[in-house]
Length: 343
Image 1 (cartoon, rainbow, N blue to C red):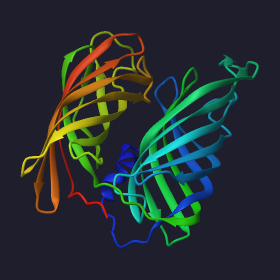
Image 2: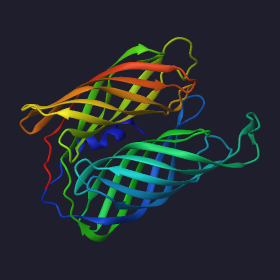
Image 3: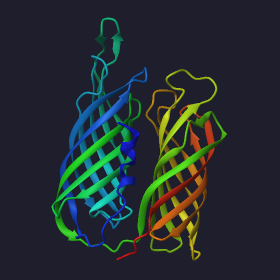
Image 4: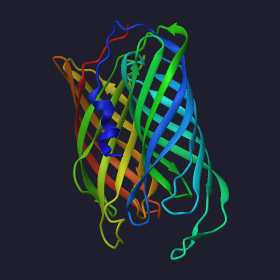
């Protein structure tokens, strides 16, 4: 899956306030295409099928449960299958009606059945063993309301099952029947738009190969001085010092939610932000998997006509799989539609 699928939500920014209220529940089939790199760094594509059920639990969020079967995730003659049971959370900064971009997170149980290649020349495989692991997924998507009874979701995400060979990019699609009584919410203002940033290294063996591109979400809370922010970026990186190909140029998906304490001058908003940081590395190499850390910094929103400009600068901290710490400064800009007020 190309990185552009993770930025799909940035192309669909608007939602009409005259759209009908959203039904409380949806239920329907889910399918996906998943790309996994082998030990040589060559990606292989696979598919999955399953079903999802989700309930709108607030003005800006939806909680669901997905069961998915991955019948073949092996790049050889050996077995690797996956059965996934996950709790899903969908964050909608502009509400869940009409054309609605969202950020998603998933935490679940993964049952992995796999056998290892014993003799590469003869192609013989070992005994199939089944293990239970925790799975993690996060990404971006867009929800499309096709009338009052049909809902479609398209999503791109990073997906990992630790202690297995499954660290990947995945494109998912869901078509659901909307059920229940319409829900009319009085949500606070929210907006979303594309973002670009530069990463300046401070310490550690990771450097940026180019700009970070992604999507920035903003959602006001009931306190005027408090805002919830989220930025998801595609980060092309490189390892300095000693490394072995293909692990010298890893790519990562940065998932950075944060709390923003702010002031509101006449021209916009000044804020200080802090939050956790998760990086999903899907490329082969020593960093493959999930790295975690934190971020903190300053930013400003500047209102201009129907647009909202954001400038920000923050310090990033990540802990690599080998325990090494990486520090950097991310400076970026973002553009989004002006905030829609509560209604």
